[in-house]
Length: 230
Image 1 (cartoon, rainbow, N blue to C red):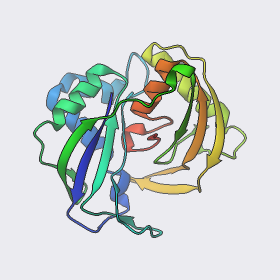
Image 2 (tube, rainbow, N blue to C red; image 1 turned 180 degrees about the vertical axis):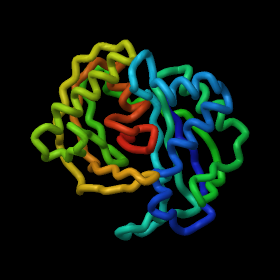
Image 3 (tube, rainbow, N blue to C red; image 1 turned 120 degrees about the horizontal axis):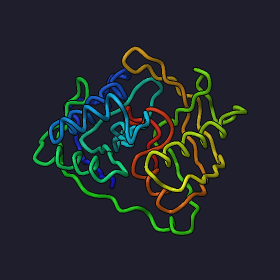
Image 4 (tube, rainbow, N blue to C red; image 1 turned 90 degrees about the vertical axis):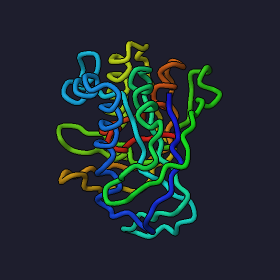
């Protein structure tokens, strides 16, 4: 399950450290408001005996803003996406938003205008999907972040996706092809560096696994706002 939260910001731009920095705290706050035990276990241990946290969130994206380097524009018309392929987690997120009039995204106040479920796009039943990342996909090998043109990128991303499938109890056969790659992005999130790039990917996998990627994102640190797909 994934859903879209329509918001308006009380500022014309979000400070760059606040683009991804607040995301993780917001997710756990929503979960904790409904199930403190689930939130604590997911935070401390991960899911199903693995460190995987099958929950994703996007940074806020806004309409009518001019893109400028080093500036994250905001406006009165924007959206944040959240989701999880685990019904228990997704249900807590959705229930946690019920009745909320605002989300504090760092120093920015986001007024909630509405929440709506997003159905998965048609075509997953074919076993092939093309995804475009709205936020950078994070992939690492031996402590080093990789970019789509690095030699080990596909192998490590595929490993991550298969590991995610195992944690969800889904068929783990996955093939990934990079169709397009965005520029290198370097973001500091609560004092830690994150380096990645957006990409357009063709992914072959079981339909239910493709849907799980759509609902929770891919790569590392999805709970911080990275690897969110459309």
